[in-house]
Length: 623
Image (cartoon, rainbow, N blue to C red; front, side):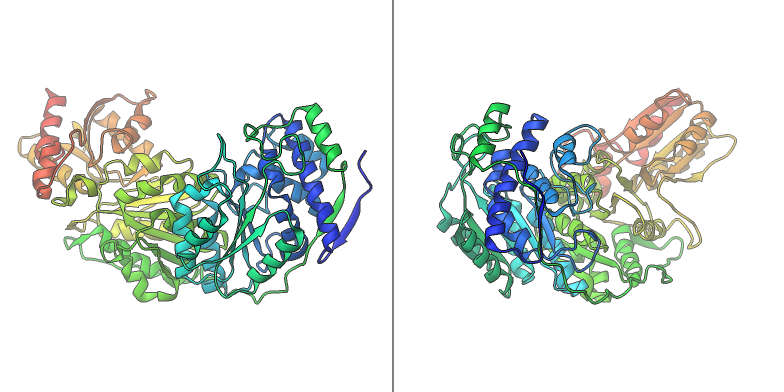
């Protein structure tokens, strides 16, 4: 039988915190048993840590989760969602009924791992090793942009300490001296299939973390007084802190505490009943800790400021990566735009933004996972992040890009040096899968401009896009095709050559657009008139223009792309026309063999995507 509701507002006393910890364990058991799935033991190990944090240290106005003065609480060990949702019940923002009937049920908001469908959740977690890197981005925003005293508290698991991204996060937290970042590591010794790498070796955890310049505090994670003292010490330290807490998985129920084989398993009803009895029964404590002091308002972002984009004369040779940098610097006049790079800014040309707006440029060095995570954290605070590196190296951060979409995050990525066009650097540097990679992300936008003008216009458009957006830029300089008054938007395309006499359509993007134009000239010399389309938006794709072209040229279409054949431009065209809405006789030219070093011209010809091959494919369709 549940006890009557009792309420503690403000800094709770330690005895109330002890009762709260028992309630959090009981509710973690109840909710997961009711759902028939979940991670109660992983929640029980951290219950004391969260009880002290929420009851005495987390400054949060639970009725106003958008308050910019609020602390941030991120569950990097997102599988401990029963604990997080039990906290939400304890502070009174969800009901016991929702906890018991909404957890892990279809159509409900208490999902198996936390997502921002809940207003108190900043980022989606559950893919381990991501919460702490995301928190670095939130911390950077707090210290350098918001200039606000809020803290970022992160509950980490010991298993995820095997992820390299956690160490990237500790490193960058130290580099940026994030005194607002406090990681709490729940060292409960047991992972999914058995003991973790270090078990309860707190000293080794501390040695490794402190080597990155992060202060460490080792405690018994079930000693309420020690936890309280550690959180107090961490809050007053002038740098990032990691509290390393020795805990017991399943703590509070003697039948399973520190027993293997209980990860991710709810307690059967009879065991749950015994566990709740051992913990003293159900409780209905309502505990709300301290609230934040009003913060100074953040300077208003100049979202409506007039942006003056760079312009170039038609015919001038400009690399789209250079146009990206110049356009980003111009868009930076908004005030809410921030830029990040992975130590290649002199090649991606985000250096131009750094020179114009140094206070809003953040170097992540060669840490692509942390770069994407920091972008996600920065957008939590309302900033508009652009993150750039070589396109090939974004593959290292793909799980972070995927999870950004789960977080409903608005981030903008730029990948330079794509395809065989880059030449002598060879295949390790040639992104040949990036378009497929980002097209596969839910709700993403994928852009591949061919010239400087279209690049600049699309960079400006990206600043206002929702979700994950990606721009592929080219290493080499190519002639400007469009005047400054030409408009470009995601979902569009440009028809560069067309007439009533067209008998074949040539589609290119980036470097292959120039090859398609050259092929059209070759065909014209033989009396063959070709339509040429600049398919600068790969997702969403301009289906209407493709249908019109297919109908006009009896379905004869040649697609040439500097990418593997799977998932790129050709796939986008096939998906648009594969429903039978127009006739289709497609020749798809793409990179089909592993390239090596060479000149751009040699490699485009080797890959079969040069003007010569495009013209041959067109003739084959007409044969």
